[in-house]
Length: 195
Image (tube, rainbow, N blue to C red):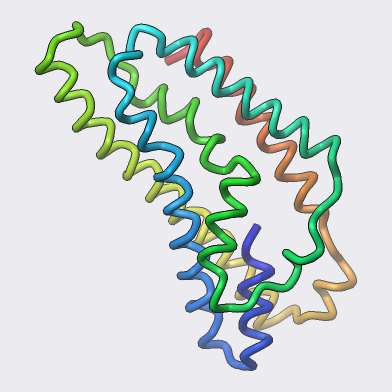
């Protein structure tokens, strides 16, 4: 969702070198948001016995967030133009507000599934492995988000231009809300029937 701001930053500065700088700021903010959501779940070793219920609950929360965004179609206008120096903060706030980190929770908890006994050593090992997994999931998600958004931003900035963007706008909020509902449903399904 941040690629239009990367294009905007490059256009505001009037040079292509601003594009990678903007993408790096967006990736940094997004990564911090992902880890802020995933790390608390990586420390919740006491609730290993409730993992299935937590995954289903997290999936339902993601579906609810997507449904809310489908119903509430208003988008704050002040977010349309963000100064390049504030892109990391915008990326963090947008990822938190739009449920990007929440979207990863059901899948993350499925990756961290375990049947360890409730012992001191088992809890320590689980926490260590899950913190690494949380950073890995946040890193892979941020990298793929940055590469996909960066590719779109480069194509728009270099070849298609601003006139294309203004004439052929796609409702990204609708696509995002639908993706939240689909990922939440997948999370509930995988918790109930899969891994």
